[in-house]
Length: 211
Image (cartoon, rainbow, N blue to C red; front, side):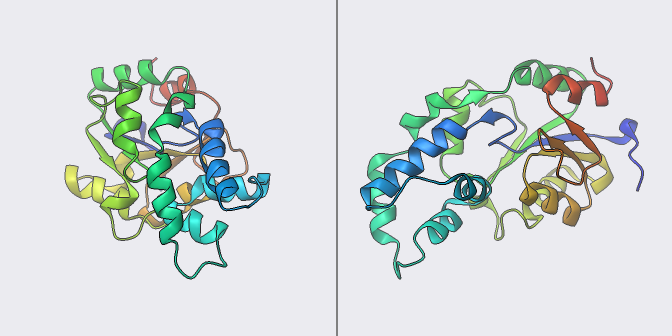
């Protein structure tokens, strides 16, 4: 399937690693949890995996010895993610790109493996009114790498796969896009198979011919 820019109606963003550089915030959050339970801080290999996972998957991966993760979830509830949100760095050019997409009539959406933290993230960074739809891991039966989030967006706006571009930075994102049949832009990750590889929001605007 060849990409026809003129037929694109929706631009869908992953959150972590695309809309935001969340490395510092996520490391701090998970390291605090690990240290509380007497574990070492995240290695680089662990961080790459946790970055893609849902919270449930991350905890099962980090605490494989536990039959029940109740204590971990309970501690995480007490710690809370919101105090780490300020350490998230919004991608340069994102606000302008969202503004340009709106002016050109594009549907703007988010497909993220975050769950209940997403509303706080958008509110903290004043982006809560910048998207037509936000789909988290909590909104679908199977999160990324399955295509459920993208399919839900397509169903909501009655779109065909060739009318969507999904922007992601991980293998999970690429797999979800492939399974959904949408076009895929790899953000700051040349190792992923994608229709385009970009390193900035400006490049996305250029691909869509809106800058």
